[in-house]
Image (cartoon, rainbow, N blue to C red; front, top):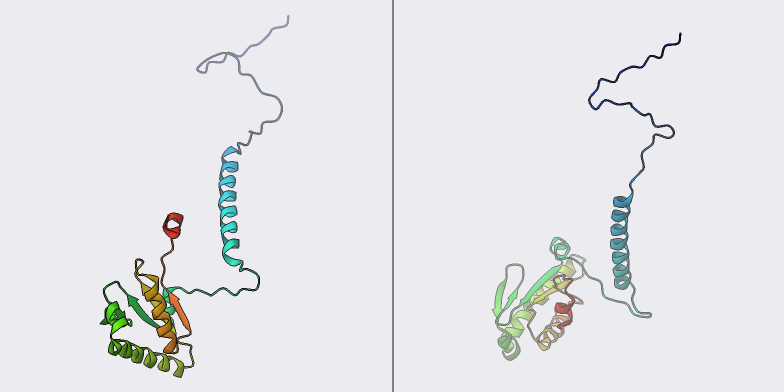
Length: 177
């Protein structure tokens, strides 16, 4: 006589255990990977397009270069001129030389500032370097004052004149809207 032997499953839940046949690999969920790659792609496209607009000069035009303040300070070739609405400060020591009205109306103030700038320029030229003037002007200062300082600085042998600026991504602030 044939006997059938059945093994009893005494584990929790009881019943029979079914075996899956075929491939036992798990599916790969790449949704989060695609999301991350999409975000990276967007940032890369944005940065590349911004860089290309900043580096392409119009045909036949040479744009001026820029430098960071730290590089200017370390070079020792820069002279600082800080222009506030109520006063003018000279050098890294911020020596006060007068007000804007004094600069425009009093020849002795202009002459003393011109002598200071010429002395600095000569000492920088003596060290086989090009003198550089860094103008730090208040945002609300009228353009005519800046123009006057540029003309004045050229008289003191400064061919490289830089302006301090703070970087912003706010277009409304830049465009004055």
